[in-house]
Amino acid sequence: MECTSGSRSSRSIRSQVAYLPKFQRLFFSPCGAGRWWMRVGWPSLWIFSTVVFVGCSNAQFGGNSGKKGANSSIRSNDPEAGGQDGEDGADADLNNKGGDPVTGINKGCLSRKAREYNIAIAIDSSISQKQSDPQNLRGAAATSFAQAMAGVANAQAKISIELAIIGFSGGARTGRNSPVDLGQSGHDGVARDVSDLVDQLGAGTNFEAGLLESEKALIRMGAEKGKRNQRNFIIFLTDGEPNRSEKGSIFDAVLNPSAMIDAINQKVSSLVSELDVAMISIASGTDLNEEGIRLISNMAQPSQNSVYPDHKGTYIRADSEDDLEGLSQQLGQAISGCQ
Image 1: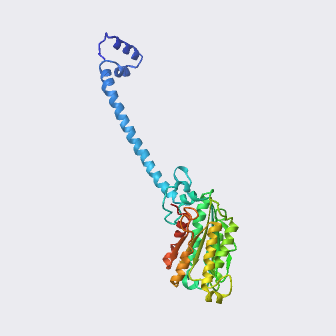
Image 2 (image 1 turned 45 degrees about the horizontal axis):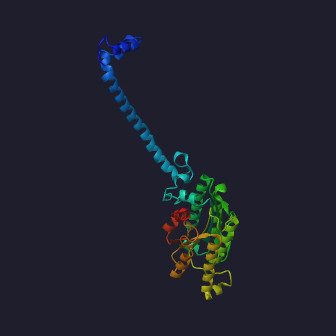
Image 3 (image 1 turned 180 degrees about the horizontal axis):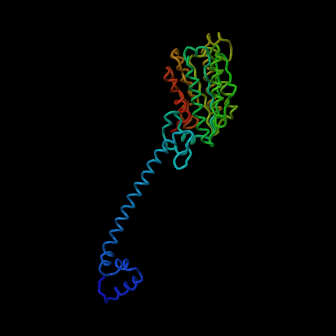
C-alpha cells in the first residue's frame, strides 16, 4: 500500500481509525509509524507470542503427563488402586504381560480370563511337616496368596474369588471358615484355617483324601464343567510320598503302592475332566525321592490347551526355605498367567 495522502485506500483507512485515541491512531495509521507497525512490528510480535505460548504449554502439559504416567504405573500394580485415567486396575493392566512384582498376580489376565475363581488349597498337615517346615512357611505362603487375591477381589467388583483351605494327613478335612469369599470377607478366615492346620497335625499322608476333600470344597463353591467364565484350581502342597489310600489299610498301601498311585492319578484325571480343574502341584522338603517327585509333578494337569488355552496345570519344586518364602508369588503367577 502506497502512503499518499490523496490515495483512496489511505483515505479509507484514515476514516476507519479516526475514532481511535491519538496513541492508537499512531500505530494503526497507514503512514509513518503505523506503516512500520502493520508491516513489521505486529507480525513479529505475533510470531514471538506464539513461540512463547507453545513453549510454555509444552513444558506445563508435558510435565503433568510425565507425572501422570508414573502414577498410573504405580496404580496398575496396586491391587487396591485403579489404573490410568480412572480405569480399574484390571483394565489398565490388560496389555501387561508380567505380573505384580510382589504378588505375582497379573490383574489384566485375571480379569480377561474369567469372572469366577474357585480355589482349593490342600496342604499336607502330617507330622513330618514339623521337620520339613518348622516355621510353617507353606502356611504363610497360603495366607499371603489369599491376602493378595482378596486385594484383587476387593478392587474388582466384577471378579468373584472363593478359596478353601484343606488339611490332609491320614484323612482330610476342610477348614471351619472355608470356603471364604475373598471379596466379601477378606482373607482373615483363611488365616485362621491355616493356623488350625498347624495345631492339628496327624499321622500318615493320604493324597487321595486331600483330592476328594478339595473336590467337595470346589463343588460347594459352585464349580461346574464347561463354564467359560469360571476357573477352578486345586493347589496341592506336600513334602512326602503317599502312604495311605481311601481303600484298605496302611499295609495295603505299602504292599500294593501301584494301586494307590493309580487311584491318585485317576482322581486327578476325573477332576480335570468333570470340573475343568487345573492342578498346581507343589513338592516341598528335601526327602522326596525321584518316584515321589515324578508322582507330584504328574499331578500338574491338564497339559496346555486341553481345557482352555490359559488354564493348565503347574508343577512347583520348593525344596528350600527361600523357595517357600517365594511361593505366594509363584501361585499368583500360576493362577493369573495368560498367553
